[in-house]
Amino acid sequence: MRIQFISIISIGLLWALSCSKEKMPTFDSDAQVAHIIQQWNNLFLDLDRNTPNYRPPLAARSFAYISLIAYETAIPALDQYRSMNGLLNGLNLKAIKSPINYNLVDALNASYAKSFRYFFSSAPLEEIEKINLLEKYFHASSLKYASINYSDSSIIYANSITDAIISWSSQDPRGDRADFHLYDSCYKIEDKPGFWRSPKLHPSLPILPHWGEVRPFIIDPSLIKVNPPMDYSIDKSSQMYKEAIEVYSMSQPLSEENKWISEFWSDDHHGLTFTPATRWVSITNQVIKITKPNIGKQLESYLKVGLALCDAGIVVWKTKYKYKRERPIEFINRAINSHWESYHDSPPFPTYPSGHSAFGASAAQVLSQLYGNEFAFTDFSHVDRREFNGSPRSFISFYDMAKENAFSRISMGVHYRNDCEEGLRIGFNIGNIISKINLLKSNEAFLYNK
Image (cartoon, rainbow, N blue to C red; front, side):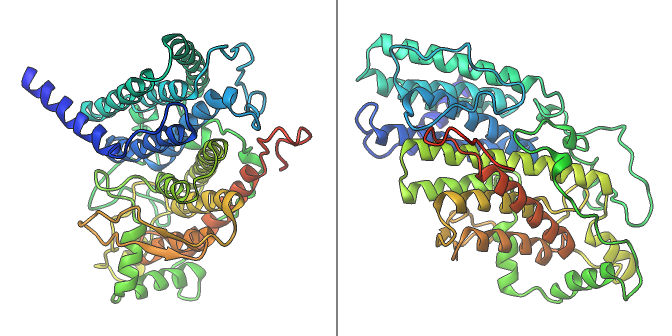
């Protein structure tokens, strides 16, 4: 047992050191704070990839809460930004007073560590150890420059903010700790053509069938217009048959370019890739590394991307289980070719609308508002992967990325065009609402406009 423990510590220590090869910036400088923000958000990718029960909407929710905690923890040091207290349903932080002795380095480090431990409580031991080691590394570095009084008061304040927001999360029973209750064995779906059924190759109960009941941050799902899916029909003149033929024909054979696009955006390989929602955390990490915005904008970027991803996931999952539509493989096997297989296994939940598409559109809308509609970007999210083609791809804008991400689900054979177009529409709508949240004190009149 002792040998195993030492081995885990060694692995974690090597990981922590590999994250910080460059010389640590001067204490409490913007560069050091940015380094802390970047490394914790990089760790989110790793934990998401390796935590067994993490699925897209759950990952989006966790990221939103962690980003909210970091943002609120930093408010005492962000002169231009206001708290979200009072904007979010049921969250009250007024009783928590800013400390007189405060430094952002210790406060952020403490809040990230505590929130990661809560939202990744189901992670493997070696992943939890990465959290502990990163926290200790940054805390030890800050103590070289700061007094213990400043450090202690900052950590106490960060823990108070974190505890309050975690308590607020716990009041949302469908969303909180959902990695421990992904399935509902009593949930029933009708066994008839057109309705989702468990995949033949890898049977599974439907994942998160009640996610539409999760408490959103900003969006009122009842006010988001969602179009119904195309009618089920095997008639060759129907829209469904034509869209099924599009999926089928694209695979006969699938071009090398479309294989690359499909693999590049898949993010469905647990243990190899992070989830489709977290892919946009990776993209945000890269954008911030390139643009080097001020600390306030960095935290605003992560917060708004997280809010958009979370609320988009809630609306999409509510719609998925409202209509319970089957994946293209079921229709194609029934009406076109009984031996056809999609390029990738279909995820174990209904097809309409596409979660990939909605996640991408919501985040792309937020990032476009923050960094520009014509932000040319090369995505290196999977540059080190050799199990599939993760070679970097370049885009002229975030919208360009979102649309290719959506298209990839058609070429992969797991979605109809109707799924993807509606997912994009929902995502852009939600991203637009989140983008209008005004966190700057310079405009006291409006926090956001629906």
